[in-house]
Image: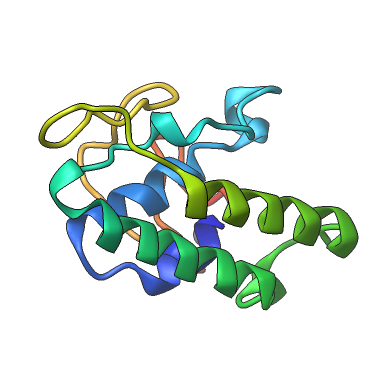
Length: 136
Ligand SMILES: [Zn+2]
């Protein structure tokens, strides 16, 4: 998903999402960081449908395995695709809790100072480097 979000991101919220997804990096932040709750995203109530549409495009890109040639491992397609489809169903039905304006992102550690794509693979870097190629 970090690969897909990084490739598709054009707007600030989309770049933040790409970094936030990259932060689900168990090789840096330890076990238990991969899963997340949709409430943890920095949704903005005023444009949630645009944000939802972007995340749906990210999921579709991931389901098409776009960019997966950059991965140093082969995700098990059955498990990965099943989870992506489950997340897509959750996202379609997701109702933002009643919070006006933009919500804060639930960062793993801290938000990076800037949103910078990896020079090697183009995936947005988290505070410790790249989730895909481990460049710093
Ligand atoms: Zn990289």
